Length: 489
Ligand SMILES: Cc1cc2nc3c(=O)[nH]c(=O)nc-3n(C[C@H](O)[C@H](O)[C@H](O)COP(=O)(O)OP(=O)(O)OC[C@H]3O[C@@H](n4cnc5c(N)ncnc54)[C@H](O)[C@@H]3O)c2cc1C
Image (cartoon, rainbow, N blue to C red; front, side, top):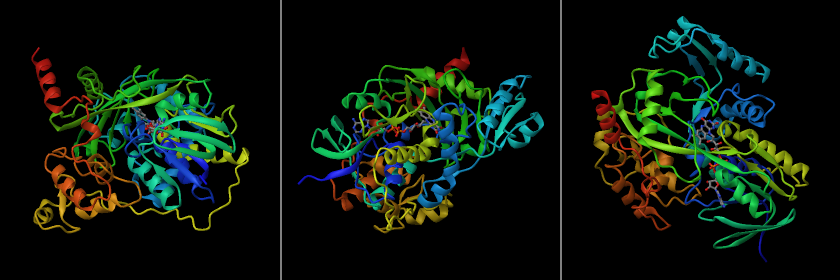
């Protein structure tokens, strides 16, 4: 007889994986269905990676309330799952004489219940951020904000959910959903599944998945944001996440260090019809670059290594949609735009409550293990003299496969053996950072492929890389040529 899962989660971004991991503490059978070749292939892999403070949205919105609750869960979650979180604090800065917009954010944050917000004057701003432009006059400091590694977080959530009994099916795009609480049938191209409850966590396609179940009361209005990423080490220029003033389309342009000390600038915001277009555009890049120069003049375009785009799942309600829909047992976790990453732990708890209210029995699993070991053991790079002798040794766990990011063969093997099939270099990259460095994989791609060919149980396609599969991205030479020619005009 076919298995009936208690809960089927559609979508393995940070929202779907956080929900699955939350539910895996109970005696439940959980199925995660993901269209992509890996987890975290949607907005979760292409965003600013900021754990937001919680002052930017009012507490009258779900976005506002869940942001704060989610942010407060990060430190403990990171201790359990080791995905990487650093509490850096954030600063909204302005060069205007009048700090009124900052006071408005301060007021909203305090109304939301935050107690770690304050206005800083020019002297303190210079002390906190000595490299920012000296014309900046005021800042709003939020001490609890930080940065994390969003795709590592989703991978960690998924790995831990699987270790606690959840099943994940990749390359399983849901095509149809029929039924109601207690007896849903979910069709993918390959297989059909049965579940008592269905959670829709399909990101930018969550309206399409809702429509499959007969729910058409919201739409997703995709809005893209582009970024420029700079070489490792450049992020040390800033100590906090630095935001310009918010715009009507969002929190505005930011400058931050990633968890691995790369400077990241962006995102802009542009409504677009295509939900899946993640190409980057030279003119948009240049605008972001110019806007960031207003905050930090030390940007060096020669250190630029990569551009990317994320697509926000803005909803027609302009808020998160987290509710049991009018189809009993079909629960939407939809329209999760920013600050969805920050809010994800709280979204998972909210979905858990909705399920309980809808009649799902949540009995604690005494064997639940909340812990997951990290793949990347150290975020500090070693001196080159230590690395060089390990580059060309025969196969061994300590052999260095990726020179720029100092990734070992042992880490690659570990990453590939944690319950999620890893069939691409891209999948290894997001788990270990191999090929994320200065040379962007020129040196290590064949070396990764050699290891993967040797150890893979699944067919490994070394040529396939989602990042280079027809998506047009602005390259460094294009950006440099453009900026140079503009400077000569
Ligand atoms: C430019 C940008 C900047 C952002 N910055 C921040 C930030 O700094 N901090 C923050 O807190 N938030 C930020 N966010 C928001 C955050 O990234 C998102 O809210 C979060 O990643 C959404 O996660 P998700 O799981 O809902 O969606 P996704 O990560 O998109 O996951 C949805 C998954 O569903 C799958 N799927 C879709 N259709 C189907 C189907 N039919 N069958 C099976 N699977 C399907 C997709 O393949 C995908 O893997 C930003 C977003 C963007 C785009």
